[in-house]
Image (cartoon, rainbow over all chains, first blue to last red; front, top):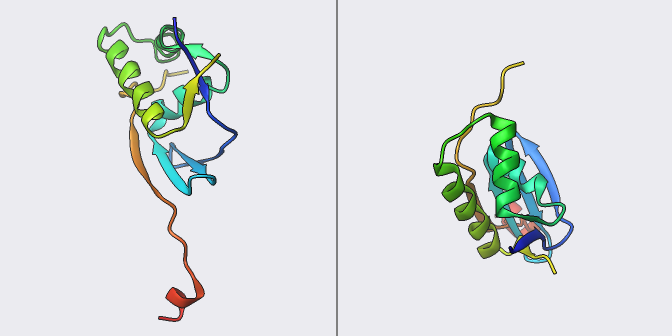
Length: 88
Length: 27
């Protein structure tokens, strides 16, 4: 199972429940919603999509099946933004 | 304590950092 982790050490600001990630190497700024920020904090350490889903389920007390697609899509988006990488 | 509401995690914005140069300030 593939695990993911932050690509680098980024500056993160919390503003109005949103997380603002400053990538000073690429001169890019990325804003995540509240749940996105929670997932981002989990990715400080290497974790699989399955682990993120489990933690989010527990934290938000939800059983919805759609969450799996939500998390998978979000992780892929973070990869596209160059913020996370595959953990070796 | 009430659990926070779940919404699909999303990247809301992903954009270049805008620099304010002295030139743009002086425009």
